[in-house]
Each structure stands twice: as structure tokens, then as C-alpha cells.
Length: 466
Image (spheres, helix red, strand yellow):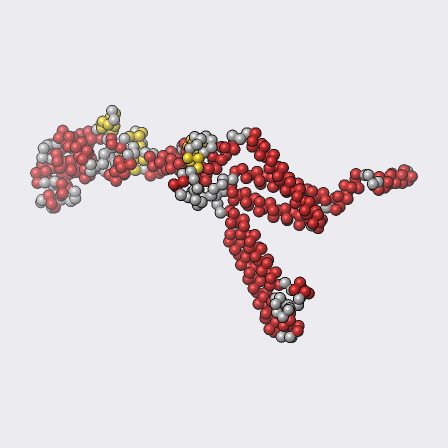
């Protein structure tokens, strides 16, 4: 058994040391970092191709840019207009009939006020109509007061008056209003709400009766309602009381239906929810002007419209789009190959230091992604992408300018004279050569504070940009 183990170990050693063996090369490539570098290059190729594929969605105009000429569509396309969608939803919400609910107390209160009218007029303390409470004093005259007092003092007359009032109120309540070829029940609405609906040309929704034309309703103060009351008063009251009964009914009449805010909001929300994206689709034929030059500058809506046209155009390319993708793959492959050969030849340490390779690839991809995203969207992302890089570069160069020492000291020691003397060289000479320790320490502390302030400002600006 020991001889068998030795022979197996000997064969593995011979196989390992053969020059044409595959496994030693594989292990050697892995040990030298080449395999990991190839993996990073492959990942860079895939991500770069995915980012550059977004280039097809780029619109060559930006909001705020001057319009150079009339921009026309290349193909027929449909555009979902967000502004039109919002406007349609707002119109549906505004045009939805407002809801009114019945107020049963309106008729009960009117009946009670008219039935107690003789007793209120017969009050001994009111010797003249002007001494009666409002609104009686402003409506009744001497003849009407005399007639009503007769109803209050005589039993038979009182019963007859009550019958007239009940018949009058019942006839008013059951009144049919013709409008639009139909007959509607009597609806007395609040004057201000009815005026708003009339101005908007909007029907109203009466609970239990459905949608009713606003013209078929009344306000208590309207002339149409007075005309209706005048006809009913002529049928039920004596001539001396007819005008006063009409005026009192107008003054005492409460709306038979009141505005229901919660039900109106619920109905408006339901009407708004029924508006779909299909209701805001606008069809643009080919060669139609999308953005006219006379408009002056591009707006966000213009950019969205051009983006939709570009998407529709790309959908019609077919095989041409495939050839474009193949060409893009070849371009990205050439760029990746050139960068990889350059790094392998001139920066071999990057091949061995994978973290540095990942950082370089990430930086290149980040800037490439930022450029593509800035072109796809219509926000100022390009500033967001450039500003951090500029701040970092300025900060690092400023720190280098203030802290560089060894190169200048070895080459010129600040000379000739003070031609190449930096702050760091001056501090060194002051401290070690002239032995002005306090002055040199203060100088170098100030330099450190300036560096810290510059770095802090740069970091603060970067955070503010985010």
C-alpha cells in the first residue's frame, strides 16, 4: 500500500511539472491575477454595453433650450398627454352633479308657520302691522292683519283657514314642474348653491330622484318660484291675503333639499377615477409638427412628446435596430480591449491589485451612466454628475499644492532664491534652519486649517448637491 501511495504521488508530481500541462497554467494565471482581471474586464464590457444601449432613448433637446426649427414626427404614434389627463379628470370632477338630500322639516316648518299665523297676528301687544315680529311686519298690511284676526277669533273661520293652509302646502309639495319633455317634482335648493350650478351649466343629483336639470329646480327668492306660488295662492286664499301668503311663503320657505358635501365628494372622486389613460391619448400622424419654432423654448411637455415619438420610431426599425446593437457590441468590445491592453502593458500593478481595477472600472462606468441618464431624462442630472468630480479634483489638487514637499526639496530646495519656495518648504526652513519654532508651528497649523476648511467645503457642497 505504501508503494502504491508513493507511485500515485510521483505521477501527480510529474503531471504537475509537465510544461504542456493545462492545470499549472491555469493556477499560474489565477495566482498572477490575470483571471480576476479578465473577469473585471468582462463585467465592464457587459455593463458598458447595457449603459450605452440606453443611448437610443436619448432626445437631442432639453427643456429650456431654444427651438432651432419646426420639429416634425417621423412616424405615426400615440402620445399619452399627462396635462390632458389631469385636465380631463379635473373637468369630470367639476362637471359631476352635486348631490342634494331631502330635508323633511322644510314642509313641516312651513305648514306650522302658516297655521300659527292668525294667533301671532292676534297678539294684543301688536296694534299695527309695524309692531309685528319679522318677517310678518314687513309683509302684512292692515287688510291682511284684519282678515287673519278674524280667522283667529271665530271657530269656524279658524277651521276653514287650517284647511286652506293644509291644501295649499300639500298642493305646493306635490307640484309637478315640466322641463325638457318631462315632469319633475318640486325641488327648492339653497339660492347660492343653485346659482353656482346654473353658472356652471351643471345638473344636480337629487337623492331618490336621480340627476335633475338645474333649470327644473327653484330657489325660494326666484321669480319663477313666486309665479308658482301666486297660482296656488289664487286657488286657496282670498284676494286680500294672496300677495301676503306668497311673500310669507318665500320668507318662511326653507330649501326642500340641502347640499350633501360628503356624497358630492364621493361622487366626484368616482367620476375622476373613471377617467383612464386611454382618455388622454392623442394621435399624431407622420410629418405633423410636434414642436413649432415660434414657441421659442422647449418645455418639459415637449421633451416628453419627443421621447414618445422616438420610442415609436425605434419600434419601427426592426432589423436596423438589430444591426445597431451589433455595432454597439463591437464598439464596446474594442474599447474594452484597448483599455485592457493599455492597463496590462503600462499599469501592471492594476492587474495584481483587483480593488484598484474595480475602482477604475466603477469610476468609468459611473461617469458613463451619469451621462446616459442625463440624456434620457430632462432634469439637470449632468450637473449632478460633473460637479462631484470637479470638486474632488479641485480639493485634491489644492491639498497637493499646499502639502507638496519632497519633490521640490530634493530638486531645488526652494531655489534659486525663493523662485520655487512653497509654503511647506518655507515652514521647514523657518523651523529647522532659522529655529523660529513658534512662528513655524503657527504657520504650519494655519496651513492645516486651510486644508481642512477646503476639504470640508468640498464635502459640504457635494452633500448639498445630493
